[in-house]
Length: 159
Image (cartoon, rainbow, N blue to C red):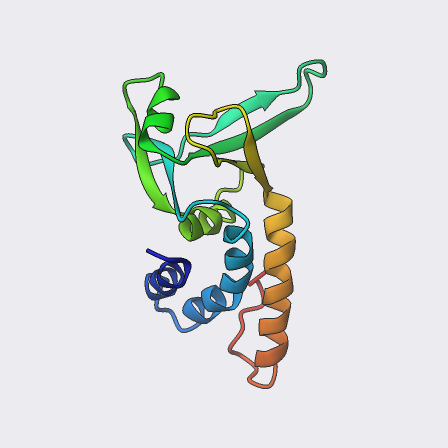
């Protein structure tokens, strides 16, 4: 599935509540920009049997008070399988647009780490939550400005 197909599926699967599909559509250019910087259209995400994504807490080597919560995205099933250490964890293929979109929903997540080269589980491309939020907010402001001529269409808590 190419990026355009992924975007259309994301919009189609948005809750049909009158606003959400338009909001999702408004932020998809941000998601597409981020996805175009990555090498794969699909990555494998580790999930537990309840289908929750596995968060990994990384600590700083010399500063014990600094932690980051990350989710790893693997380019192949083989790479993901090498990182499974528990019986109740599975690797699930996910479209890259969906992964980036979910990042804004997982409040405790600091970064996504995308392993780009099969077999290399050392070098990753980091996508920080704060960067995603800043980029999305630009597109949300544009959406709000363009829909300001239709008051009542944009919920006040959208950002």
